[in-house]
Image (tube, chains in turn brown, red):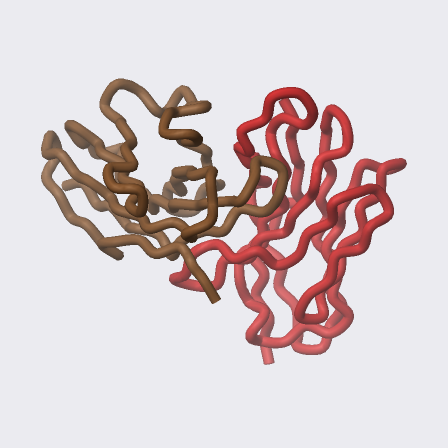
Length: 113
Length: 116
């Protein structure tokens, strides 16, 4: 069964460093998303991506964040200069259309020291 | 935009007990409704969904009925198992009708612990 994959599973970085989180969505899906979950809190939407551009982003997704689909299979989230409060689990998701279920990857746990 | 309110947990039950986790929503139109489950140390998995009013979603013994009149989508299971211990999230698309890019809004999650 096709699934969304994410790498790495755990990333530890120093404050101020750049990180890139990688995702491979399900191959026939057209919509891509990033969410995050701070430990013990609810899942929060960051950004959606369709037709090679950002379609919606939350207030969390400021200028430090960017997304890219560089090669037609990978979907990346870059945090340019990490802050302590960026420590969270980051989930990638994809869907066939914008009205039905999204399929989530296993997440990348980001720890900023 | 659309929103969802989920009963606060945590919920602790003995094996074979009956489970209800309440979820109510506010929405424009009639969006699809979802329950996602997060097992310890894992990502989110779709547990079940309902795409229109009066639909019943079901999976792994869990059920939820899309009730338009009470704007609810409560999750139920007749006999829980230890392996059901997880965090359960109710979710719906943030915007229904018109332009929608599929952003999901999640409830705050309910931690379920089942003891033998």
